[in-house]
Length: 460
Image 1 (tube, one colour):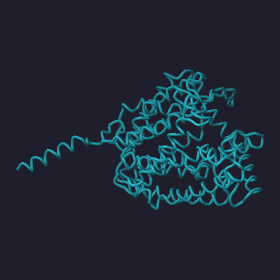
Image 2 (cartoon, one colour; image 1 turned 90 degrees about the horizontal axis):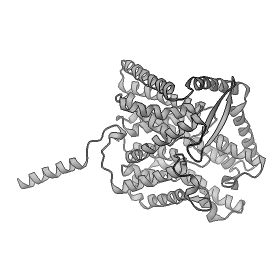
Image 3 (cartoon, one colour; image 1 turned 90 degrees about the vertical axis):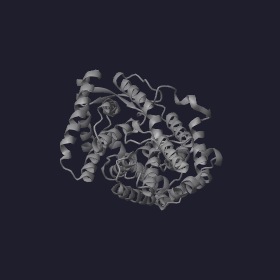
Image 4 (spheres, one colour; image 1 turned 30 degrees about the vertical axis):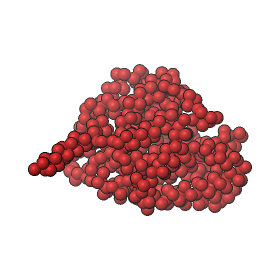
């Protein structure tokens, strides 16, 4: 009898320690270990320092040695820390789903060794200055974070900073005054003589919260208290006058609608979705016309921006035309160098362009993905990027079809499917790959880590 009572007490105590987990990011009470929190805070600080968009401290404040910042050492440290703790996520690390990433890492390492010799660079200094490559290695800290159950905790850390960032971005875009350091503001003339301020620098992951809240509304229920946050997070992307961003976010929202109808098999859900859309649209219009100065003028400017995009495509001018020129320059660079392995990791990767020709290449490397990979890594890297895109595109879609819960993991898998499809066949930026010149970006490392994690743990 005593043993039975003791076991019951243990069960009750265990239940109290592991409170019920709700679908909302702000309503989660999952138990998170101190080690998971430590890892989440480390990743957050890397994002916080690297983005430099919150108006609190400029990037220069974090410099430690030459052009190396605190975030660089955090990046190196977390990578080494996650590799020392491989046993915790050994199943994920040894997963066949990670083989393509490992092969690409081997290619990057080989390119680095050859480039150091070819361009006579200091081995150690150049290795640590290729920080863009190091971001690819974040996939290992992300895998460890997922295994420790710290993804939602990371989101809770980021959310208040995302709110501040988006508010400051809106203020900068409306007034033309930089309320955040390390951002660029340009006054652009649109058709019809309209002039607007364009802010270059992005917000602190506001678009992910916007799309996640929309996902919750569509797949679960409408939470009206989230409406102000949804409006806040989408407004900067309206004021950014970025046509590709408008198209992509609309594409993701449409994909969420289609996904929910497919999973529920209830076409009556259309009525609820129409109500949801009308509530959201009314909220955006009210906020835009009430709180944004010169809203009528900005509405005309938005229409002019769309018209400008149509003209750019028709006459191959503007941003669209420059991308075509960048492709031509990079393909020419590839054809006149090493066709199989490209130019390698040229010092241009970390040193400011010195000539006009290098400026063209530098802009192209950051603007057109497939041509950048072709010029940098030749046919070898290009074919590996094609395999990467096909493999992870198909894998993420298969994992999505297996998903039964409307969890934050399912949202990210659906988002990943959208990213792969959009970058491959829709984006007029000629990306073709989700893979970048540097391998995986910060966010792509997270997406692939979640795909691998969900592949092994479909019940999450």
